[in-house]
Length: 91
Image (cartoon, rainbow, N blue to C red):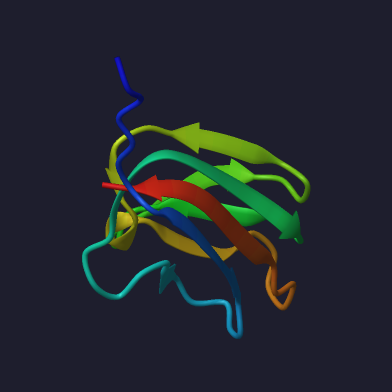
């Protein structure tokens, strides 16, 4: 039996340019097995209405089956523009 493959690799990073919440993707981007790493300066993760989950610099979280356009990040500390990187498999 052959190996069935599906989904392209998705890789993107984003660096904050202000202290306001920013949407990781501006249009629908559904992925599975997403590894989200904050590479510099802690970030707050949440929805358009509230970003309260802290991801420390160097921290990684894992989400399965998510639309990246529903994720919002902002600087955990004012003026500390952090970078968020995502590695995932597109659905």
